[in-house]
Length: 132
Image (cartoon, rainbow, N blue to C red; front, side):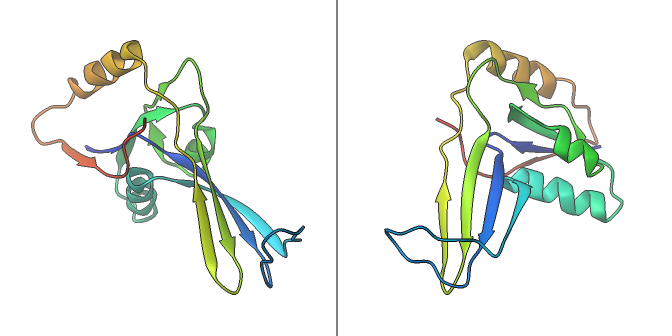
């Protein structure tokens, strides 16, 4: 089994604009939401290639990934929100990336226990940023 780890996953809110004007109201041409974080990106690609894998990490929401066919075993945090990133696609691309929630010690212990279930022959892919 291949496991991917995303310690600080994100919901990417992508906004398409003709132009972006600082300090004024901007109207989008279109918007979309994608589930992001480097390990999640790896799981999404592996799933699209038909390679079985399981995404691990910490989130407040993972239903969207399951709808895409990605198996998940995330630790649901007792407080905070999953990181939200804003991606502005206009004449120039800009990004505003959130920090993500703090990981409490109980959740971290549950994550270590989850990792202890890996067996010889499993692969573990660590990718992305570390939460506060």
